[in-house]
Amino acid sequence: MDQSKAAQTQVLAALAALAHVTRLDLIRLLLPAGDTGMPAGRIGEALGLPAPRLSFHLAALEQAGLVRARRVARNVIYSVDAAGIGQTISYLMNDCCADHPEVLAHCAHGAAFRPDPQGVGTTPAGTAKT
Image: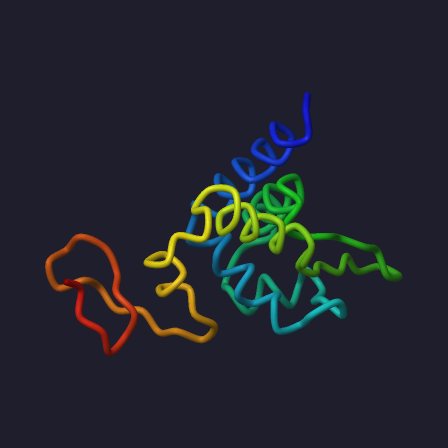
């Protein structure tokens, strides 16, 4: 498999893993924890997830290269794999969207999004879609 096919396969796995609200919540929870991560028990408590369900979702994110796990004593600590997330975003921005100016305008750092009033997509907060 050539390098571009491998990258595409990784991105598809990452997007499939992120296509679930619980997994997005896990990423949002783990990102601020950085490399320190969080123990599985604390993650489950924070999101109100029973251990089997949490384990299922964390395994999907880990398999997609978006989360790492390490054992510390009796705890399993989970943290976001910044490289995996970065590669996914980079692929979408550079290989998929090819620096399309309208797409880039919607991806400004810290931009807030609101639903498009016409139901077509989203627009950056404070702008009107023409």
